[in-house]
Length: 155
View 1 (cartoon, rainbow, N blue to C red):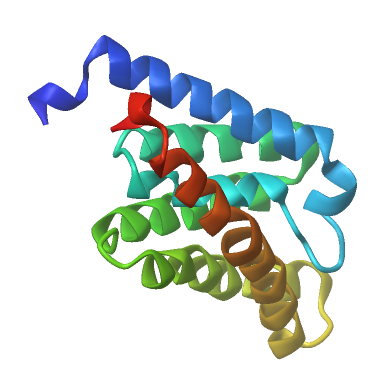
View 2: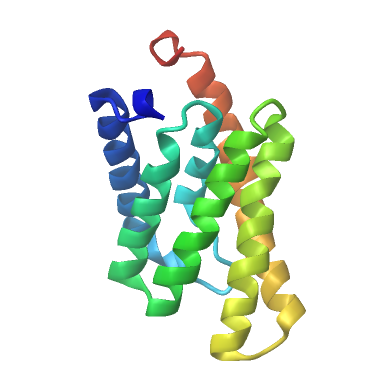
């Protein structure tokens, strides 16, 4: 743990937080819709490459939610992203299993939160959040990770 708090890791976490928050805020129309497809959620696979992504994602999510959403999203959205990032890191040997972690965490935390806030169908909320997250993680996140893995600077 001592080696984690290096200048490089702190800077990388800050950059990831800024990118996540910036993308979410810039693309608000997609980030907070009925089927939420946060393009920034593709970044939840970055813990596959570095543990520095974990705090960066959580902080970036909190900042984006603080600016664009409600207190419930500040708490539960940040918690879902943090849990997803930790599980993604733990399952980093299998990219597809790791990519499923943000989908599950967000569907099972944000879906019920939306039901609690707005009503509707509990299952439909879980499914729509899960579908949006699956689009972000599998269609955007996995290609992002595959591209970044090819960069010698990141090895």
